[in-house]
Image 1 (tube, rainbow, N blue to C red):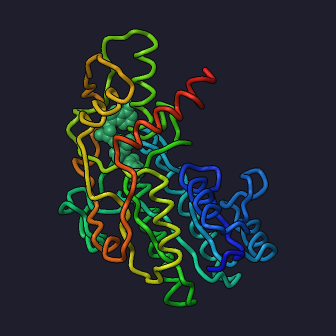
Image 2 (image 1 turned 60 degrees about the vertical axis):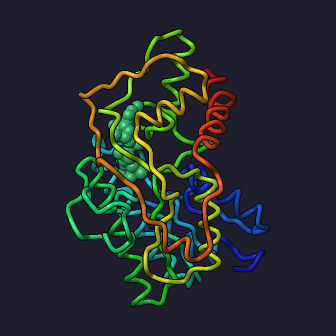
Length: 312
Ligand code: GFB
């Protein structure tokens, strides 16, 4: 990839796509192509093909996806499977037709079986049943991996697939009905502080374990792998460290200076009991994350206060 290569970042407004654009620009890649959703809907095959034929991107980062937390996944299963399947199919096929030199596909750690041995190695893919709360999204992401591998095998498309763990950071979605846990708990803590409430309510039992990666670290890994990785084998991207949801709530409380207590709402689902990636394939290539969870939470808290809470 040259500094002036034409790079299409699909999903440039999202948490991941915007972080990858920032990282690419920092590295001097400034010939970035992007489109607003109103201009190009990647669910539309004809428009997607036309866009690739006209713009002729040389490299593609496929970060456009329908994403959300445990409640959104269970409320909108059709959207989660359909939107993701059709976006991946359209973009990977159009990229191959247009002779793209390399494509990076973003999967998710939820592709692995619900009860996969922890930490989860790449080899765990398709070895057991999925976690029901996000199987629709997971099936779509597994199909994306297989599309990338099939187009590599049949059409020689240099498509690589990264499996990021749970991501967070500035620009995340803080809507309680659709967000992931970390931004949700930032918002709940802020609202409790503002209202002088004695407790915040955390969904489920607080015992599930999750691994959190700052989106700037994910973006750093994505650019690193665009430059250094050319295999069709999937590769995990995470920190190799997990915490319980209770510990996460306590860390956010600490960053916010909140001294109230934590209540648990057992009517809400826990989801998968543990989701920790084995990141040895990535570390063997020489990459590791830089942002410790406590620092990333403090930064995301400040971003929320200045950019979301301040607007009311
Ligand atoms: O982040 P999250 O929604 O998704 O939830 P998953 C993680 C854990 O946090 C679950 C608990 O045990 C939730 O019950 N939790 C506690 C909360 N309080 C809250 C809250 O206020 N909001 C939310 N959202 N959770 C997602 C998948 O699974 O992981 C996606 O749904 C994607 O498809 C993503 O794969 C990476 O970690 O369970």
